[in-house]
Image (cartoon, rainbow, N blue to C red; front, top):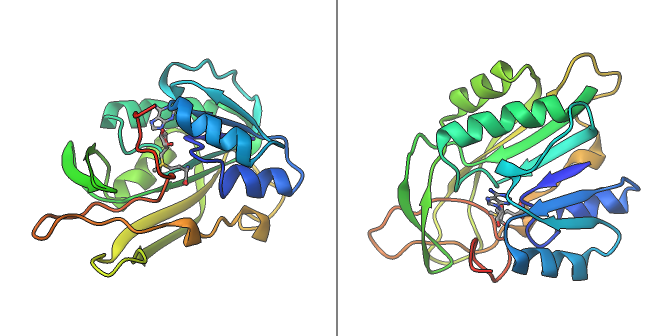
Length: 207
Ligand SMILES: C[S@@+](CC[C@H](N)C(=O)[O-])C[C@H]1O[C@@H](n2cnc3c(N)ncnc32)[C@H](O)[C@@H]1O
């Protein structure tokens, strides 16, 4: 299984490896990869920009993309989802989580750091995965409020998408990675916060 934007390795790679799956996490931040290797030694981690990483067709049983698209352009997100869909074996599963906001190059704040965010509204994410040849088998939209006194509710979208015919349920308990690892994220007073999840103490790109 491939975990795209694996961050600290928790919870996604850790949950999948703990369930007995062979997991490769990929993250562009060397600091994240170092943390993940230390925290989840049972998974493999590679430091790479997934946008340029070769992905062999039909080579993964499953791909997870949890909140890793937000620093890519819309064209890059679209192209990556298409490539990830092709990288799935027939019957494979893509699990995608993002912040479903219709924003491009939105200046937000992540753990005190200015970050530029691009995303799509829910219906456009769904259209994107369908255009990539996947079937949406399960969808959940939630509002999540980080555990911080100044935090406001944040929209999150979770999709389970199948490639071709799948024999088992799209929503086995083992696939659920709870958003409980989401930590405090907030913007300065007056600013519009953008939601995403904690990826540890090290902001994207700092490594
Ligand atoms: C918000 S964090 C989410 C981490 C983890 N998936 C989670 O849900 O806790 C996004 C992660 O994606 C990584 N990332 C962003 N763009 C990437 C890219 N082009 N290639 C590989 N990793 C990327 C970042 O370094 C960061 O660790």
